[in-house]
Length: 311
Ligand SMILES: CCC[C@H](NC(=O)CCC(=O)O)C(=O)O
Ligand SMILES: NC(=O)OP(=O)(O)O
Image (cartoon, rainbow, N blue to C red; front, side, top):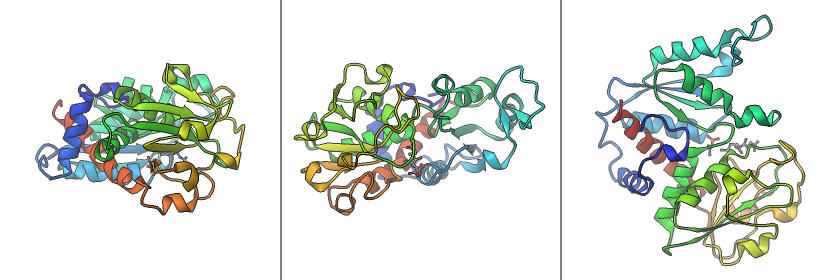
């Protein structure tokens, strides 16, 4: 593996999931692989799980880690040919090349603007670093994708499924802020690779990109969609059609114990209790969100391992 910016960068997904689960038995079995190698993690946005789990993963491989909140450095210009007389101090062309001098692998988190659909869809931040860095890039959530989260979700379902082909439901839930489509996009893409029966359910107006949904079942009726589910993945996203807009905050879409039935509850976290999901669900045995968060270390570690092996 050269870069991990999208799920399709993984050559053999099923084997990678198995290898990640095996890593958990002895997380330090490859700690010579990363010796004298440095991971630089760049955050344009907040993080708890991604920041801690990716650093942990790198250190379990013997890597050194440097973390930069990019907004504490210089305001970067991403437009080629820009006349830089305003508020941008440095062009990504220099910043990316300079960081490449310090890093063997660069990991980046850069959320979408949720204003400029074309810019967000072009993945201008991630692709600028891909263009101007000389080292591998790992996506820690970009404008349209969160492949490390999706790999952790796949590991979790593989560990917990009791059926060969479980029914998985991705359900929208209300949220006070306009959130990215990235987590939903990558979860859907990951489930399409795996042998699961996937249904997406959301209110009208929250249709995700056809390039993501493809021929996956979509229902506007949450209760119907949730019937006989084995795993229920709940996530808010803002409208894609009416880009970045909050069209509904209908609390009838909040996940409850009653709606959940006997299914396992999944969420990438952070989660708004009693807005996205009621306390009773998160506090129940059916919630697997902590296992998901733990698996973030092993999704990052198996990705970094495959990149290190290819350096
Ligand atoms: C891993 C999820 C990161 C991000 N979530 C948020 O920004 C939630 C922020 C909040 O609830 O205030 C998202 O939805 O993409
Ligand atoms: N799930 C996830 O990526 O969490 P953070 O935003 O806290 O990193």
